[in-house]
Length: 260
Length: 264
Image (cartoon, rainbow over all chains, first blue to last red; front, side, top):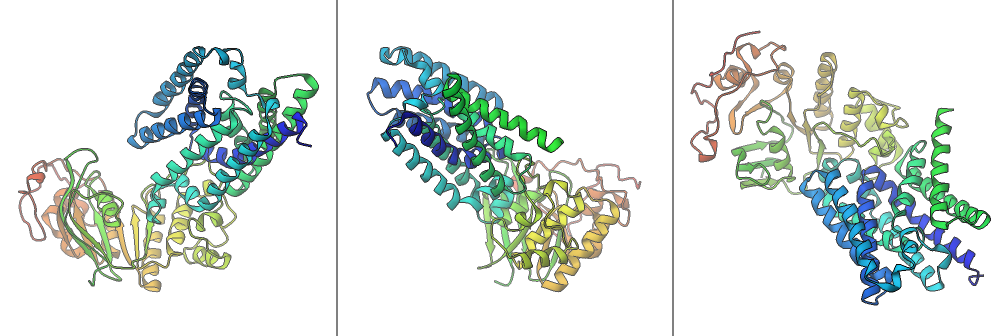
């Protein structure tokens, strides 16, 4: 069954959707959208480094995304003017990454596969990595769930309960870096934050508790993966962008449901 | 140690500077006591609370909390991120899960029974304060710490809220430490008042404090018994506090009244 490239693509997408829902909910709750962007854009730089040093793409993106996540995290803690700072970091990281990748001849030809993902080329090893990584991150979120939700709601209340909000912020930053690294093959570095944010935003409209929202976001993300891949096969459209387009359609539908 | 919390010569600096927010504060609260901290905006009230709770680094001095002390805390202006969907019931289970019965009992005690299924964002200011209080009570605290708990409530709401606080003390025996602007009501329901302005200006029973010249200088001569006078007129210079030559405790009699303290 795993011999079929389409089955592998579906499985890779579902593995990512499973963790993108809950993690994306935190990104929405904590208004970290730009944070996700800068980490994801930095991943391109990671690809360039990985290719020039001939190490795994996953390891390269994970390393650079982690550094970026910690950097942004530290800036947040210092209370810098956030949106400007993140705007600078996010787009600089992307630009530097694109310049760096132009020095790697082998990568120039398939640059778009790193920007927009190449889910149909996912192999067995990728699949194992994506599912292992997703399960680890999901397990981390579940283990620390109460602490993460409390400190996302209000840091002062969290501290009163003996929770250190800085640790929770760091946990989320690292989780984000891991998911960015996993997602680079699936939706690419430009659309990772879309896969995190759009399903969570769609779930927000009608979810009554944080848990429902996280679960609903995961289901919507999974639906977007299936719908996007199906459309990609039928209409011969690029897979990654089709998945995000499907998620966007779900988002629009969710906005309509409430109003009706 | 008989006090629940005790501080000695507590000094706090503004983050990243050596500018003191609070200098040389000695503070203690005993079991079952209601203590209210009053003072102008920026006088260090919230900083004192955070330092006593251990949420803020001290520049110097000590804070001792009784071993095993359970604290129920309602921070100032809890701004909930509206991006998180959250029912009242779910909120009560953060971060420690409680049973439905416990949750409902806490809500009933604070006068908002049956509010469990509502979204936090749909509550009125008064309801939300009661929910926060209910959540703090679920920890079965020895000490309740409330930082400006009546902000955003109207006058009848404030009176009712303080009555509730007194009831809670009577029922649970918990000590209560409050920061407040509601001078008149504070005077009525506190055992002890600490008047703060970068240091302890004066402290003692409400009767003592409301007659103290330091208090009158901070809040205006008409403050005693006049609700209209929340806004203090205080512009005298405390910049010399860091050098430690401007520290006064109870009974300090020097003149603070640089500003016109006309009764309103």
